[in-house]
Length: 90
Image 1: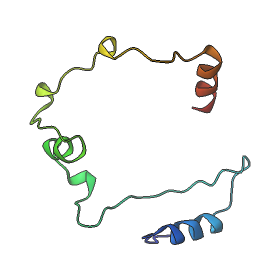
Image 2 (image 1 turned 90 degrees about the vertical axis):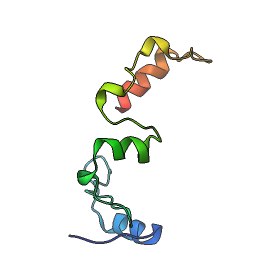
Image 3 (image 1 turned 135 degrees about the vertical axis):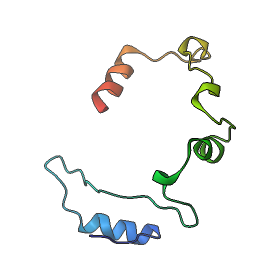
């Protein structure tokens, strides 16, 4: 079924027609296309960084390495109970 959804009304109509699974979740297989933009599979590395991240990198060699130790401290630490809830919902 290839329907084009262009607004919230059409999306909600699709949700109403979708039969929920045993956990009452509606599973949709969607392909997101943005009018006026090329298909993401056709993007070059440089395009992704410029358009999505607003950064200028021409190759992976110029991208800064992620270091979790350089992240700022959390203002309000997360309790073990809250972490358990996050893990359970993953």
